[in-house]
Image 1: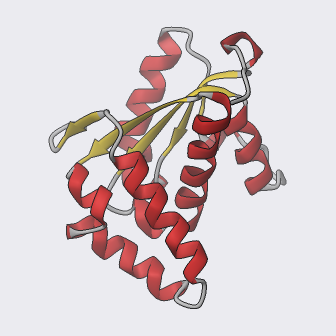
Image 2: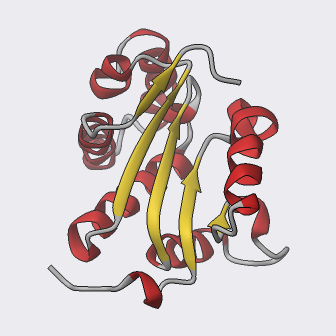
Length: 158
């Protein structure tokens, strides 16, 4: 395992979230709270226009000491979210990045097993990527791993 100290990091926290589900409620409140505590936090609205999104996000994930994954009902229908998730888990393994899942109006077991409303969301993505079974397998494994981590769960947080 490679070692990387917190001082090497540009960001304290990277937040992975499905914008249309949580940007204007939970994620914006989380970002504001972290910022008030002078915690350097990256959320995707900090990308400059014209940036290559995938490369910029990969760099931000690698440059963060902690990743917070906000699992919401639509999270698993987003290819971008799941690709971020895979990268976050790579950084957890390679750099001992801390990963904290937050289950926003989603049952952790539904995220872990791709069942319930979360599973319906994932099935939409499966339909679009049915020819790419390796990618789907990677995403399923990442969801199971991340949703098995200790985190925060609330069906009522706003």
